[in-house]
Image (cartoon, rainbow, N blue to C red):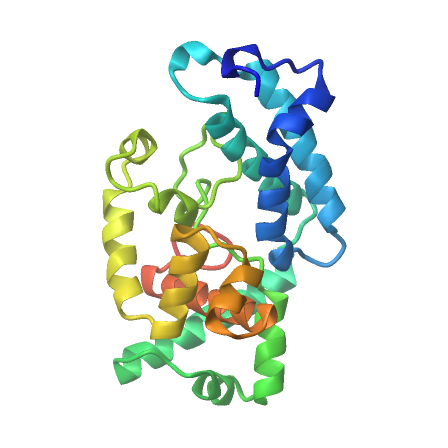
Length: 248
């Protein structure tokens, strides 16, 4: 493989040959959260453009390997593509907020995680309809950098959950001053149902795709997506952020 200091933005074939796995990896991870109207190929295209742009902006003197730099630029570009597609429209945000509020209300009342049947009853819908709602809001993130009001041209479209697994010792973690966020999330994570906690651990910390998580847990990829969405809604409800981002 070519040295990291010699990446050439004018040689996309070599870039794809050496680092194309980064693009396919993130497209595979994000595909189950794709909104209607956006396809996996759209993510691949966004990732390729981001890879070329990363090669043009890469500065080896900063002591970071190009693969590391490209990794977060590519994923960020894919999430930005999802946002540009207006994947969380007004009605979807409203539904996410309704679900989020239902979890928060029930869990505050009972002092334990609310079950799917309880949430469905609270909303006055059948369980099938409840799961359909979960599928509709599956693209919701735990919290983005925009939610923290930390604009940074070098941090495109990142979800805070993806930064947390890097740990308190990471330079990025210190730069973003996420101590209070992590303390709140840590408390919320401890109170999640065991299976949802495991899904988050496998997806964010072990960096498995949702399909791989399903294989580990012997459940369908669709069920993994539902458990992921439930966990995110519980945490957002606990932390007080609504589905539009920012303080609720």
